[in-house]
Image 1 (cartoon, one colour):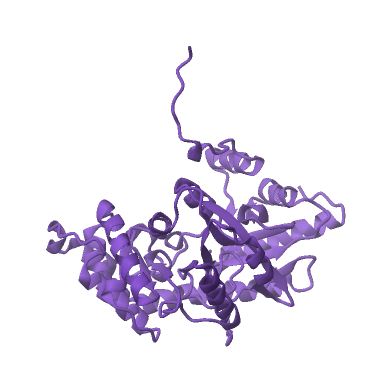
Image 2 (cartoon, rainbow, N blue to C red):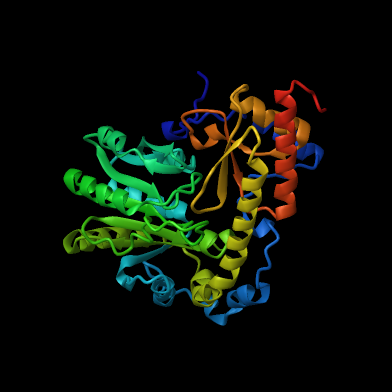
Length: 402
């Protein structure tokens, strides 16, 4: 009898690469130069980080002493408090849990809230990571639609209510959403709180992109950290707030009715104490790192806005439509529907050496859309968009520009 490796069903993913991944892999092996308009790692985008100040904290002799706390070092949590105070919000150290990443934060929250096969409502389109995180934690994802209408994205609240299941335990919102860049509005927030109260659900709010608004929106909610009438979990971290994904430090801020909040904190403390995953050097350096947040955020935000303005102007009058983003690092283009999404993306990569995400990567319900990052240096983004628009115009005219 042939030996069978006892892999868990939760890891039974399709591992065969699609045509786009194969082509990109070939280019990488052949060292073919490509313009990557999906780059989401700010450390690869030419920003002027204060390198000496950032690295100095890692050389502190205090890093040689291990003094673990389930919620993270108090001084580091106090630095997170000051981060929110600068935004006009008050939280208490007891409400804060430090984690190594937002992915870990999600896993801890799912373990806290859900039994196997219980469900979380999450927006669509959205970042595909959630499907994997929920699967790895034996949870199930149900999608509620984000709809684009009259120049803005909004939660389809009617559809969301219909999606609630007897096993639904939480609603997940990303604020602003990735990739739509849509902030939660005051009206949506009020509606979500009522839904959570009616169905006894928790609200999980991922605010990692909240420091990067791309325009004014007086209707948006600034943060959910002071939410007290429902059990609420807000996520943030250095990956976006300081553009330092390699430093591996994020946080959860809990809030809610006193009795539920106390119970949630106590249970989450046991989960966190089981792993103690946040490294000591990052915790010790956090207070100084966050003091420099304004300079790096201004650099990143300036780049995002500059690239967004170029994109708007470049696409205006073209066969493409730019779907405006209110915040975050991404932009969405709707392409002519004479070809499939995959055909367009493969064409851009194979013939123009420009890589963009197809909309299906973010679970768009329709096509053809592409998603691109606004982080690359302006000259890189401008060249990539110029090639894409030239290719589209040529294809619509039936001209092969190879």
